[in-house]
Length: 303
Image (tube, rainbow, N blue to C red; front, side, top):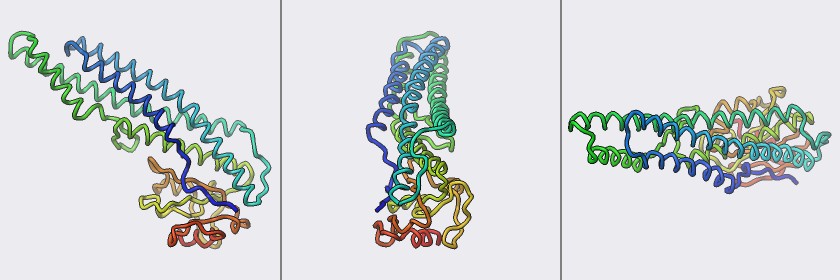
């Protein structure tokens, strides 16, 4: 019998790899600032150019990484759809292969992830730019006050910058919703969010290819904004308006309501109405999976 996964499977190794890419480049950027001999206007431009070069390299490395990871997760989702439908006893005509629709979906996921990362990296540039601009202004002001560019003045500026970096770093990684992230937390969030999105889309598209529309949201007792959606039956396309006499939402409506927020690992799983008794559903009361309770649990979740 089928027991649905509680979460999308995310490997610690994948998170660690992405973190390493980001942190390595980040440390190189900090090194450019800390090793600067002065913070005059001309040198500021040189430092920013070096920082941009590191950001570009970081972007290439991240894009190479996600171009491998996202297709793999998408294919896992497609395979999950086939395995779950087969275990339920449903007819599955298309089990392997990826046509143009699948390829376009994968490419769109990769492009969206790259775009999200590029937007966030611009925050590092802006943060460094503000920091260096402030250093230039401070150095000029102190030079004017003392009448000359003294070594003690430069030392004071560098000390202040290093203090700022030690206290705050360049923590200007901002996502599309305006949330700020430290570098390591951003790497983890980006990986978890986009890999889950890829897996779920692979699942949905393979199901649609075989003529199935309904999915159930996985459950593990979440208490955040996803909690109310756990166990609910959703339509992937909007073609199905109700299930067991109850109105149901679409995957997009659930997403708009907060399901699949950053760091979310909820999985979508295959449901075939006339075979639902073969599947296990999550019982919020007992906090266990119960065989043959999909219909009942879906109604409970909708209340």
